[in-house]
Amino acid sequence: MTQETFVQATVHLHQYEGEEARAWIFKVARNAYIDEWRKQKRKQSLLKLSIFSKKEDILSPYGIPEDALLNQELSRELGDLLKFLPEQYRSILYLREVEQFSYKEIMEALQMSEEQVKVTLHRARKRLAALAQQERVGV
Image 1: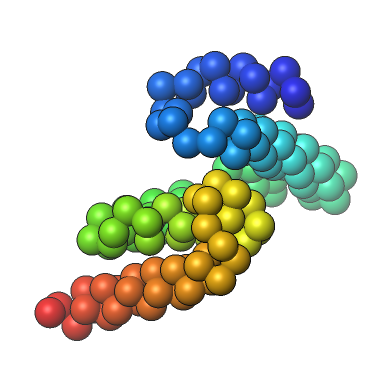
Image 2 (image 1 turned 45 degrees about the vertical axis):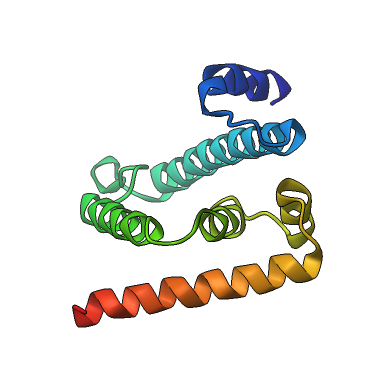
């Protein structure tokens, strides 16, 4: 995992934007771990299916195409909404919701107090919900 982390860090070095190096390497390591965990989980699922199912009943490890398309569309819509948020709100939402950072990790990465993290995250979620509501209503 350590080797994979540094390989991925090297490959994605162009995405490094001068943030705290420790937090960025942590994100890269976490993503490498999650990728490996998903691969192992997929393999286990396939083994279970192959033991208890006929070969023609085995599902794709990549999921159902319709679900993937819906998720992709939701991600695109969410990305479009995020463009209307201030950078600080986008960053804190990304760290908490996508990268699953703890409040402490966000504090370190964004150099904020715990109270600032909680308040900013609450405001960001509230603003995003308001934008989503406006989009649904068509305002």
